[in-house]
Image 1 (cartoon, rainbow, N blue to C red):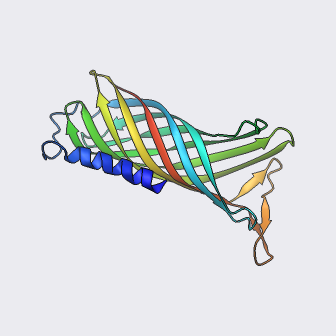
Image 2: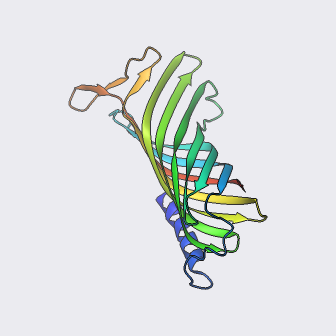
Image 3: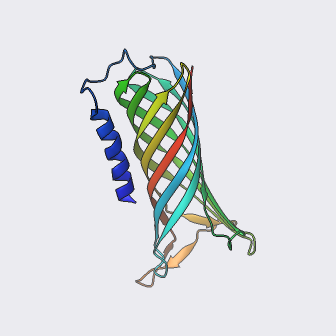
Amino acid sequence: MKFIFISFFSFFFLFSLKGNAQEYDDTLFSYSRNSFELKAGTGFGWYAMKNNDPDNNASIAVTGLLQLEGSYYLSRKFNAGIMFERVGFLTNKDSTQKQANTFNMGLSLKYFLKAKEKSSIFLNLTLGTSSFKYKENSTSLKVSASSYFLEPGIGFIHYWSKNTGIYIVSSYYFTKYSKIVNKDNSPLTVINNNGGKENYWISMSGIHFNIGFVYKF
């Protein structure tokens, strides 16, 4: 998983050095200060999930992503906006009675490293809140949790016309749900290795890969 993220990062880094070695040229890229931008895309997430249950401490999860973002250009190099993202956990064919999803909302900050005509590479940092829900229809089990998340990444954007284009982003995602409650709002607990009771928690860390369309106005 880390290898995939590092490889993706390296690809964009080498791309940015390819060709001429000029610095950021703000006369080339099609952005300007006070521009607005809308992004809509999809992708996948791949996480290592850990918890404090001595009998079940680690697993791998794959998710599908739907993302929407609106942003504003403070300058030709800096962009700030609000990101909304739905994360659906993929289940096997025999677990259709189980549903798990997450809703993320956060502040997205971008710094543009290098620009060519209608294309640019950028660094991205998103900070925000995450809401997790899980239910089993067969047992009426329902649990939920909330937390903060951190997501640094790197991306590429290309405009094929004055207003429309495509973007690709690879990022590292981390969150920890330190308190998970049932439908009665009572926290789930586990017995730790020392025989004591503590709140059940889950942490998720891994990669997000997103691709989608962008519109500038």
